[in-house]
Image 1 (spheres, rainbow, N blue to C red):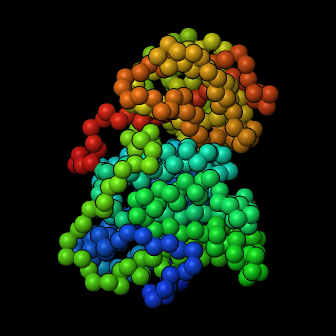
Image 2: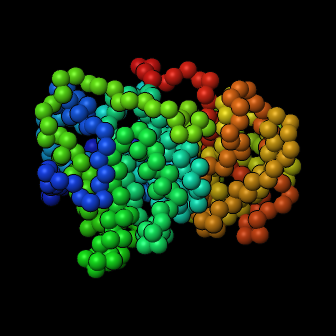
Image 3: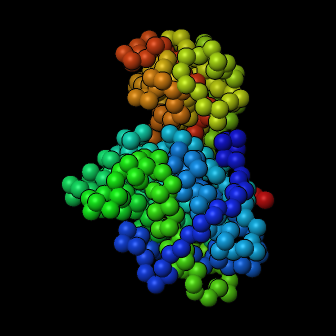
Length: 404
């Protein structure tokens, strides 16, 4: 939704990022090349830089610090900074909204992405689900914009740090790192960095700032990012742009053709209606990010709708509040299955999430039927659903490479 991914022009900061160009921090893993973005910034004196993620990207944190670093690094360049962070969202939602919130028919020269924390604590994603979301993002943007340079960051919560302490790697980081390695993308493992810093008593979790870092914590991240770019951009400017290699996908069912589908493909009946909810009259916290968005809504058992779609996966991007219900769904006349739309953060908030109705289908035309169940989560106060967008992974769609 373009209303949630506004273009920002960031004011100057007093401090300038610095990084040793001769070496990289221990938890920065360099891969690939950043020659394309340098060439664009220096030769055209224009640049489009996008940030995709959850609340850590949406907040006034590492993102504006990196923006200011770029402005000081290339003082003659006019930058457009696209802030596409939406609180609470995971990599699957990111894959489906990439076209509308980031690419938008324009070039992207440099792209920053983070979803490790949200895929862990919000989505509770399996390795497979986290791969499908993150590979969906990376493969999609590299297909649409082959020259784009990318930095991936693993932000940090206490669970991600504890996994490292146990000698393990959390599913979200393991999955995202697998994608980064496959597509030759540098990573900033802030989770490992902060775990080591805390265990060495050089910083505390409170000083870092927690899941939503304090200025000191965001500065650590921004400096690590700068170390990658400074190291690469110290090299001579490339003579021409070079598309990044495109390997075979890790998972052919990853959401790399993810997009939002129009409600026009939905036949509504028996209680489903499309309108802008009056959020002031519906209990639960509401974020203005979603104000004015028409939703396909139902709140009675038996309400039913049909969705015709083409692709191999179908999801509903919803706001799941205190009254979120259970959705019954079947694909192509098959067996019914139940999906609980209520989330553990729904008790006090209309929480944005994607519920996956069908995944790993054979590519082609399908029909999904959804209806509201008489059953409900014991913590929910009702049987409602409010669908902001229909999400389709449409492998049959023509490439969205360049439609300008």
